[in-house]
Amino acid sequence: MRVGRVDDVTAFELAAVLDAAIDREPTSMVLELGELVFMGAAGLVVIANAERRLATSGVALTIQSPSTLVNHLLGIVEEARVERALPGSGHLGPEQLDGVEVVSQRFGSSLSTRDLRRVAGMPTDPDVVDGALGLVVELALASIGDADGVSVSLLRHGVLSTVAASDQTIMAMDSDQYATSEGPCVDASLRGHWFHAESLDTETRWPAFTPRARALGIKAILSSPLRAFDQPVGALNIYSRTASSFEIEDQQAAAAFAEKASVILSDAHIDVGDRQMAVRFQEALRSREVLSLAKGIIMERQGIDEEDAFSSLLRHSLRQGTTLRARAEAVLLSVRRSERGPEGDAP
Image 1 (spheres, rainbow, N blue to C red):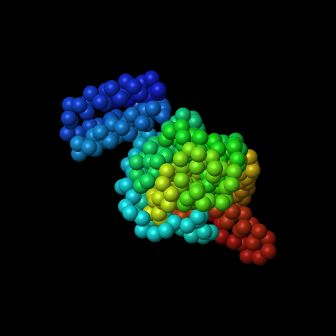
Image 2 (image 1 turned 120 degrees about the horizontal axis):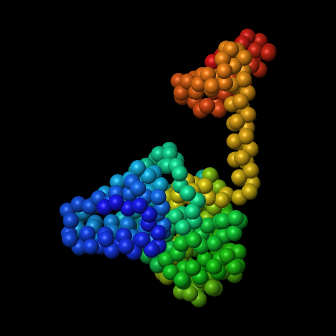
Image 3 (image 1 turned 90 degrees about the horizontal axis):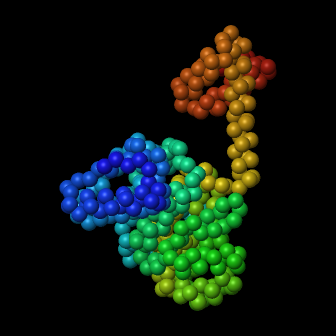
């Protein structure tokens, strides 16, 4: 089966085709996405649902696509799916302590951070990003014990809002936190570590928000931070109607899902604020300046043109296992050293 474009309309057609194919009880199924040019939120949900249906019969849905974008988004279904949490292995405190890492290897991805960073070309189309985050919400709700609702809060252009939620009650939970400017969701989004409200009946940290939450029947909340470019940009929020329902193992699972969502946001170049954007822009300008100066030095020393000078830098950086900028900085350093004494090493 080949798929080209999947938007809100064609998603229904794709769902009908997949359902009909699954009804024939196949022993295998391959979905070819090599010609895909667009994948909307509805399409992501359709394919995820088809995978679940096939899995109940012991059949795997094979996705064939050269698109790193598609492989990454659909990889959430496979990589972020965790078994329903086992009985808690310990008491969970009110918030993460500085410097304490609590994500267990059991919930970790089989892909390393370095591997995930190689995924390129994620568009900033909010529909695609929000659709992927919606899958994270669905999987977290199905996987974390005693979770009655899940949402993703995200800072966009300096404003915190909900981009994916399991139901309207959970949307209201988030909105009440934004309106009062307090709550675990707000604190996790702004401070960059997890917060846990074990029982809202006795919670005192957020006096304006907690009465609103209790009025909607919510008794416990666990919020884990989302990050992009090492900056907090939002939170994955888990809600329960049962007090004292979350244990350490639930926090570990939530952290694993938050990590998946953070990779999506980083790959999508999500807004991290004007200050961070300015820093990255200045850093890019600096790298360009360093590279240009190094090429000029090599051209003068070796009597070669700009293209050959760049090739020389590239060869040395590959041979030494360093970045191109690091090699260029080494050339500049060699000039400074030669002005004070023996000539330093240079290409």
